[in-house]
Length: 397
Image (cartoon, rainbow, N blue to C red; front, side):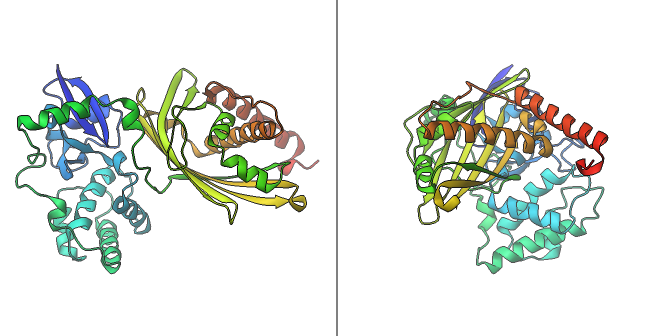
């Protein structure tokens, strides 16, 4: 076994692997990044394409040990990438996917074309995508999707990048420095504390994969509620499973949220930034976090707006919650269940908020137990279902 130290999706990773292990097997089996697909395993079909030091590479024929010190980006690491976001929307619009098996590698290759081609020339796009095979679509929708993104970006005066930012000739990854002067830098990166990698210096904007709208009321004036939302430590104390790990600042809040889903326990370490607009009594919280144990990552955005009720004596809090979850825990993110869980969590948060503003202590749980919440949700669903059975459709007698 050989210990490999590299960066995967901007996170320092140091794990052991056999010398024969491919990069594709390494990211799938050791990091649970299963968005990288294996097809031919001969470097022909392109389903396994990832970015190696920013350059598209076939991960099925690249040995993981050969990537020592490299920066690897899988499809999961492109969740917040501007070009990939545009391509995803275009693939949907142009019906550029069916079974979706080739899509991760196709998006990585298409991103490279969008960055470097000067115009949306169909022939050059087809040549550029010729290393990515699709058995479903016939490629017409894929080509149109890539064309539309290139045309839109060039119309916005976004110039192509010469060679898509490549600075070295040779195979992907061959531009990495191998001299001894880089060893201290690599050692520092490999030994960086988990909290540093989980709490990046810049909290990026992103496009959420799922958005939920929620609303609750508080028997307090909007000005008082808005002032409460400015007390980050107090707000954190009202959220189940949340704790701060450093003194909060508006531009950067560092913390931890503990989650338990049956036998699975996760602790998402991360950071967030807070934006507020007193003129409209609204604000936004954008955060990012990772769980080292499950190799899962999440990005979240909460937008809130306060609406006066009862002549200003009460407040309606309108929330828009957006999130993207990748890794092992993503398999539990079924929209219907998540929506019901969000309702329960918001109810707990609202209750804690009301108690805090009324002078009582919030009832904060040490960790967010999805099992107990899911049990309540299941009971509520069963009650609704049997209610429809015994009272007729819509609950009417």
